[in-house]
Amino acid sequence: MLHMNKFLIFSILIFISGNTMAQSLEKMQWFNEPEQWEIKDNTLSMYVTPQSDYWRISHYGFTVDDAPFYYTTYGGEFEVKVKISGDYKVRFDQSGLMLRIDPQNYIKTGIEFVDGKYNLSTVVTHKTSDWSVITLDKPVPFVWIKAVRRLDAVEVFYSFDDNEYVMMRNVWLQDNCPVMVGLMGACPDGNGFTARFENFSVKHLPDQRRLNWLKNNAE
Image (cartoon, rainbow, N blue to C red; front, side, top):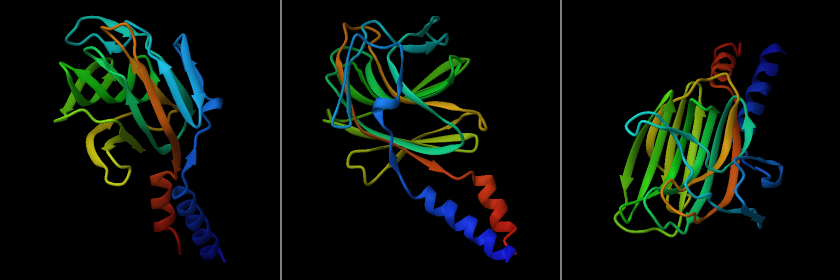
């Protein structure tokens, strides 16, 4: 009987992990709310605040924490993805996902427009920021960005069709603490632009340590 109960619990956790739920955009909240934004047909459109960004200290010597971020809070392990597009205009215009614990610990990842080219960009901040890019050969109308948080790591992926995903970064992020998860746009140099976020979804994943324990203690 005990064996059956453990097997049932393990099966339920696996079933839950395979079900993606669209996060209700209406139930999320703003950090640095922009003047213009709209939610329609499961799409968030925002006019990104001019002269706004997220960055801490390194290379440039300044800290900014004032760009629009529309988020909800999740604990534990999860997978989040979104389809992003934007009317990028000037250097460093960007939009994408953000995972944020506090002002000193966050990940932002998506498209960033630099020197006339589209870049798949990830900024990782733990007290100080770093920046990595993958330059695209040509502009793209949209891109899917996905992040998977497992234990103390986040894997970041991109896709052009929501089927084939390619990993662009593996990032440390403290586990066992809540994370603000959501949609970010920044415009450090320009006068603002329109960013769009479609089909935002979050899938809870059962804790990997718990799954391993159940598997090893099923008898």
